[in-house]
Length: 129
Length: 423
Image (cartoon, rainbow over all chains, first blue to last red; front, side, top):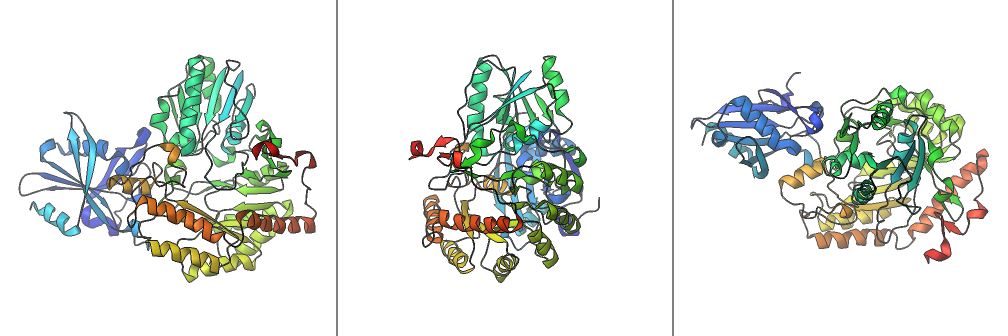
């Protein structure tokens, strides 16, 4: 599947994950190794290209799957949820970024808390600032 | 085997005209039940449910979020009697994790071709906790006529007037609309039924008035036109969601019996104004569906929208406040912003505010919701506007010979109850 050009600044490839009831699901993913040694993961909701569960609804298990794939330590892992601009006249489909913080029980992330970020903040975080 | 199928009751919106339509989910499900199973159906919205152990297996079919708590309560009581309970339907899928705590089994997805195995498993005492077909929709040609024989049809009359029967010609939707969960429930593709199967079912329906419940008929022009062409000889009169605004489609829809359509009115644009006029030009009435409390609506926007509705000569209007149902983008967005403050599913009736609106307090949004209803129906009450719509369909029916007079023997009953008892 080709990457939607509207989404590509913040994604390098597609990531397959299991959504609700093990439904095959897909999001965009960009992993950035920052100057400070931490790994920044940006998971992009790809709407109609995602056949399964939206990113927000399974964000904690999804972040766990990405963490394990990246082989990063939980304390060195920063997770951002991205919804791209769909070009709709409805404001609900504009671009948003949220940093998601979790609790870590030794095996899995849980209890997500979202904090809205600006594009500039995300660009800065990608550089490790 | 005796299978007790139950459609739980829910509390109707305060101040709204109450009418109970024969439910659709249970009759679609009943059509897929193996022949050897005897189905005893109770719609709790029109009759009392007697819970006893005179059943082998219990099914609970739920469509609305406001049904789930009652459904769980019923299941708990049957399970105390030692009966196995399986859940299915739209709101079972939306609330599956919670429902599992009250169920021996939950069925997720669409039933055609799947229930023989479920009942066989029950017979072997090997019922699975989950039957998950969410990602595996059935072949559309397997969808035959719904089994409406399970309904007690006399209960769906008000003062002798029969309610519309529900019917579907397609499943799924290509859109990701903000408040809608169809992308989760029905997949992200549009799946029309074969036209001959649709006509077969329509031909068997003894009700001339229908509500075609498809999310949208406007997703495949060629199929839509073929559908309407095939419906013309049947002379049914029907209500539906959106129809495409192409003239040739509207012309065919009118010939096929389009009575009125639900049209979302989300702004005060000429696009909406012209769209309503276009329906009216083809003799199709319009009920506007207006969702209040979106993040792009201020108090002034809502008041302007109500004024606009009066200008464009809508036949009916239905106002709701945003209800962030699970598995919708609305739910995801409000969840991320920690704006949902009420998780009592009985309050998710689209008349109560369960989240913090962006531009006003929840109390103010509630006031504006009532303001919208009161202002729109100030000069002509909802019952009068509905009466006008019924007159329109009666005229059409009288002219094409399909009119059935109201049932005099049910004139003193409203959904099975004596009208004097309801006063």
